[in-house]
Length: 288
Image (cartoon, rainbow, N blue to C red; front, side, top):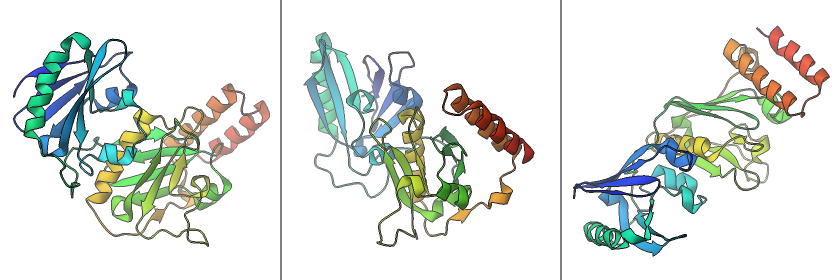
């Protein structure tokens, strides 16, 4: 179609075979949408369009994503708030006739009731990506995911297991639980994971293949794009064995500095005493 329809937080450009969605940067735009920046959604990744009344004199145009087509939506698993839904375009109510026309035209181009996609059709967020969880720092370079534990947040089980590294071939998928609900976490699902004695996976706090959220750590706009990128990479590869980094190898100066910064944040917040801060800082510096 080649036309552009601008809403409050985004603009949709209608192309011959796709919809290019550009998210605005600004204090009123949700951080997740700002982090996504721009997304090209092929028409084959859409199964329908809806137009409904919104709040405070607005209308909402929404493209219905095809199941299995978008790694971001697959990782989110229905946990996103409406305001953070990248497939919603909110417009002033007086633009309802124009929005209705675009909805009608777009709806005529997409395949209704399409079967779930066999592969991802929407590009995932690009690596490298990283974020701070409560118990460690997660990083993804496009080929491997690494977890470096924070002494002040990681469980004894994780600290004893040592920092972790998993290639995408090690993984079958991810499990993301939003930090906006209780007990949020990101768990890497391994192809050959060793569960608990009863066969169920370990709780995230005890699982070296998971990081937990909380106290401002693991924000949606950081952890969800990360999860989507890892999920897409895992789907594109196969087979493998997770690799643990020995504890003795944890002497990278940048990692030590990161741990000290994290410790300082907890000290400033009053969660670590002066004595604990001084003692642990000395230990960390001794590892350099």
